[in-house]
Length: 102
Length: 167
Image 1 (cartoon, rainbow over the protein chains, first blue to last red):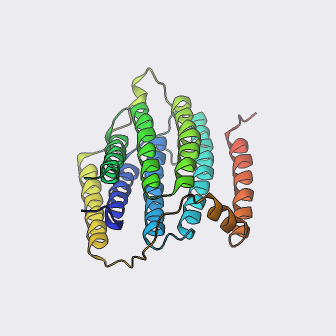
Image 2: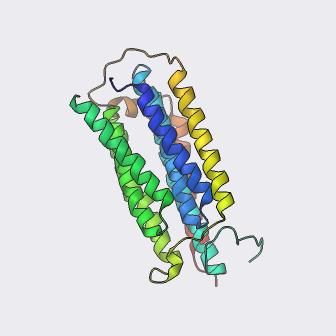
Image 3: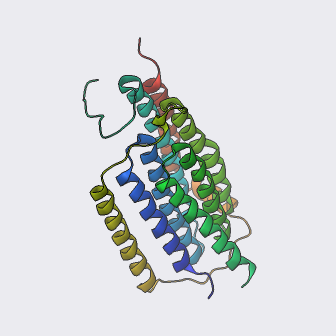
């Protein structure tokens, strides 16, 4: 059976679910971030698979590039916030960080 | 089985297995390094989809940038030698519900993906996508491109402002 669009979509669906499971079950803030990266990568695989099998149009690649740009900005900001939480609470357990003013 | 099929199964196995390690391992350092191999597998899938520029971007930005940031975050916020490096446990019931929900979503997605009749245009892979991507970024997507550059600048300044020590 030749490798087609469906193969890539199934891979991205599995990766998305793994990332979602990580986001739901983890308590450490950075582990939640890692789950988020998996979900974003699953979306990117979808974009590029549709770009490849939908007539090799370049728009899917452009969308994936913007997703990567936003992921980089999001990781920088999120880690800055996590460092700040660590300075205030001495841990990064997101279940216990519930003060508006530390 | 030709070489492309073998390469596809190799890279997708790499991605899925190490993605699962990221999600299921207790040691946060193991998770960070497994994320490296998962990203590498995804870059391989991009190559198979003839997206050469995006494969290089994936390796340079995700592995060279975001992953290094994440590992820095792990080292700055956890005491590596202590028990704190292991992430906390949650209840069995919550894990059961989360797993059930996730499997349900995965099954639904896979069912939808495999039963839909996608419109497939016949297309031959390009030699290189860099030319097309550059042209598209500086013509049709110029405004979004400039907005993304402003966003990155603001994000870097904001991250430096948030993360610095308070006096």
